[in-house]
Length: 565
Ligand code: PEP
Ligand code: MG
Image (cartoon, rainbow, N blue to C red):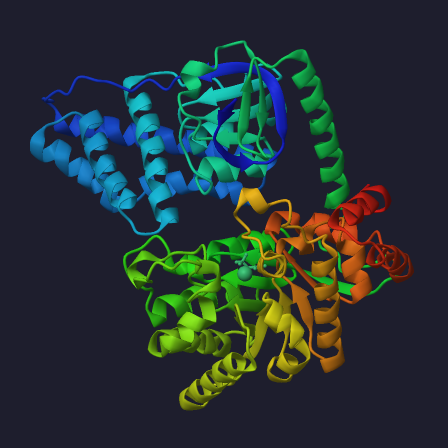
């Protein structure tokens, strides 16, 4: 089995067609007639634009106007007078051929994009490369591979799928796409998702390993490619594909709908995100808000801390994207399994029980204030639904300290105070939830850590994975008590741990009175559909049965029998 990046969901089974993009070569020559050469270049650019416009129009029909804009972006780039005048100058001053002028200038732009800080701008380098290849082909009179006429059931295997190639594909004939390069946010990935073609990207040596006409299975949901599968595997994946397609159709009916239980009680499905771009996904996937923005991801993979302005912009962006919705942003949850090298945290014997999250932040006040200020400003400058959430709280003192800091800063800044609440993810917080509620505007249950701490088993240690179960009666009792404490105190209670998206647990969470389920953007519709299956009475019946059971195994078996579809 080959592994790659799961870029577009679904399962495709078909026969390999490999398209090898040859490097376009030409002889660099001096030209005797620079004016004539400039004219040749301009003719080629005009042809490029005409073909691109035709492609964009086709895309508009086959996908949608938004995706066609990606292709139109290529026209815009080549219409840039600055770019074209640089090519003209090179032909005029150095008497070089149009191919060389175009390649030199476009390579320069490509390098500029590739060295940008943010990933989205970096991806534009691929677009420039695509433009360059197509323009050179026009100049050299090379015909493009005809992707429109690929036979039905094709698994397209390419080194890199360019946006223009994607635009040419006949969606009905392409079972799946496999590439050797490209990432989740590349235009090819975006377009294959828009075309709903399963795609696995960045599969090492795919164009060599996967032979033309051989059968392959492409699992775009798990990033897997099975070469020459056995008949039994094909049957298994065909069944999975049919199941996936059936469910996908069913889930479509939940787009844009309120989240309601079977008997009409209102619930909310929020999203867990790690950066502002995920906010876009949350919106696209119909999330009703953000229940957890893990801000530590803004601090990772870099050499120094993001300053107040950078943080402010990231937080504001999410609020702007999901305008008017509740956005719960968790303050820095450093430590444990989340290491940030430049923070110079001392290595500890028990990092999960050590100097992490709010413990670290309260000892590094200036740094923490910077994040809190950015949050208060973002709340102030948007619709005011940004809530601040504190991770790893174990004492009332921590909560009081953070509240006091937020309140003092808001007063100093003459801005309104955002809501401040806590994750309930430690046994201490659960035991004193009724007291903590006095100092919190909301609770969000972090079942990932809560399970690890209640069961006293490291969440990443496979030797104790048999204990790490949210189905354990100990964890379930904790969840029930936390929700009850929140309800008694009159504050909203959500859940942002993985358990919120577990269909087996949903009836119990409804019965306990959970209001908000925060899940990954891809699980929004599924979670909404699961919530819609249960009335309060039926959920209560399940819960009564489950709460009388004694072990995680018994609970799981019961739920598989009585809750699983
Ligand atoms: C949790 O602990 O449940 C949680 C949502 O946070 P994280 O997984 O980031 O620790
Ligand atoms: Mg946690």
